[in-house]
Image (spheres, one colour):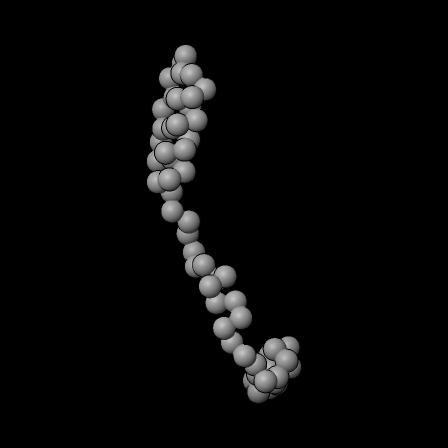
Length: 57
């Protein structure tokens, strides 16, 4: 999005434009924090990964 700030604009008007611009932008990607602590593993994650890699050989 393009916002035009004209010469002579006040600090308040510039702050309002920036605030409105921030509201319109949506973050990209996935919110990974909602998955934190959801999986209970019986083994150490590193050991599981090593076992999976050994299966390829």
